[in-house]
Length: 240
Image 1 (cartoon, rainbow, N blue to C red):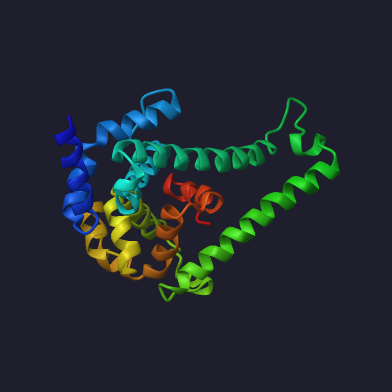
Image 2: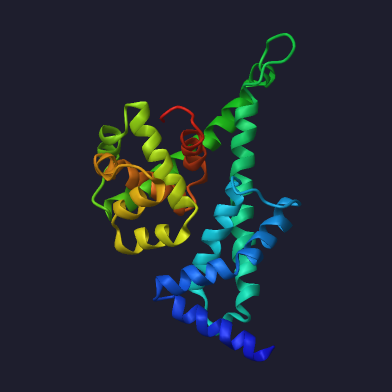
């Protein structure tokens, strides 16, 4: 048992600098990742669940930040996954609460219309401030990639077919956390891997590289409010 623990630690340290080892480690421990996700969801996770992608990336993050001083790796990884999922749940719950205010009742009045103005103002101010902070953080991080908010607005896909290609590429990246990790490390969009893995034309992705920078950052760095909007795009909603 002790030798197994030492072997795992050895693999983790190797995975810190070897993406292939990291891929194998994630693949070997997918049952563990699914189990930790199931504990949170109180059910078996589906491949389409955002929580499973979040758990996979949290496991990958755990590899990068682990040291033997933190104790057993799997305990550390389990805590990382739990914390990520809790953070996401809290933000999603706030967002879903905001969305539910627009649901009409039997008299066609929305819940928003029945809430006192003082409460509306407080809720809107809180969400608006949180959103403003996320946008400011995202804008600052995008500068490291040589991309501005204006660039993203100008570079967003306009045609449905092009948007669909970007959707596939982003979905593929989200299901392969090692690609997202390489993206953060190299500060370059892995156009070749995305095109091949998602089955889309590389030229189409190249034309929207700056847009992809913003969306990939949103998918990897805890921008839960912005990610909620982006998920609408990934599921076939409107282009934000």
